[in-house]
Image: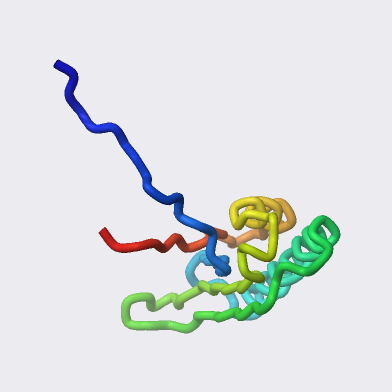
Length: 130
């Protein structure tokens, strides 16, 4: 007898409109260095948006918001050295570009700098529970 499960997905998870960037520097990194990198990350986002605007005929980025987390805490006496960026793209049904394609080009346009411990660019996945 044949046993096991056949994986099946009723509906593929559609792209959403959000892309996130999480940035982690080594502890104790000066806030100015994190701010400089976030400015460079914003510039690489702009280059990526321009690239896809030529391809699609319209810009894909609607909004962008950055957060910086720095300063000493009880759990991190040397200081938190991280930041994040949330990017809202136009609705997926108004563009041909998939989120992963956008993320891949954004990564290529972003230069790593000394002290950068981790850079994660991703599109949060959601879907029906269960």
